[in-house]
Image (cartoon, rainbow, N blue to C red; front, side):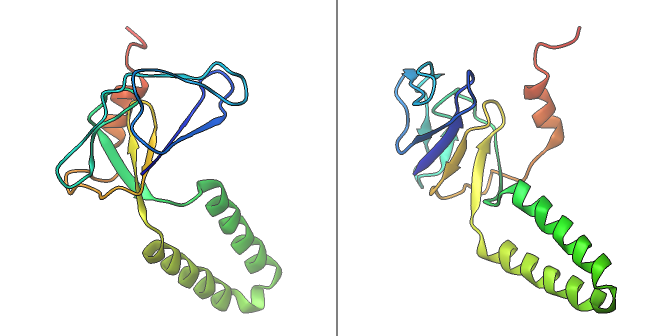
Length: 146
């Protein structure tokens, strides 16, 4: 199991390899770190039920792919298609094939809606679905407005 989170002070990555205990998880860059509630739970199959950092029980899953790299791939595809417009169809087919290979070849990860912690290397429960904007907005805008 691997848990990825970030320091709220300097946004440096924090990597854990077991469920955190209650208390401060120190940041190696700034020394401050992130508080963990330490209420993480796994079910009988070993999939995540409660986040070890914030105690939230709502998660979503997505492919383990760097979205910035994906954006650069799209920009590269468009640039190649514009420059070499004679080979437009082969370029598009090639990038579509690459996309299919990545989609079926990359594993899924689980993310916490509340603290955005990433869980890798755990079995994924069937109750954990894809991203839901309504659930995300409930956490992202909690306490704002009104």
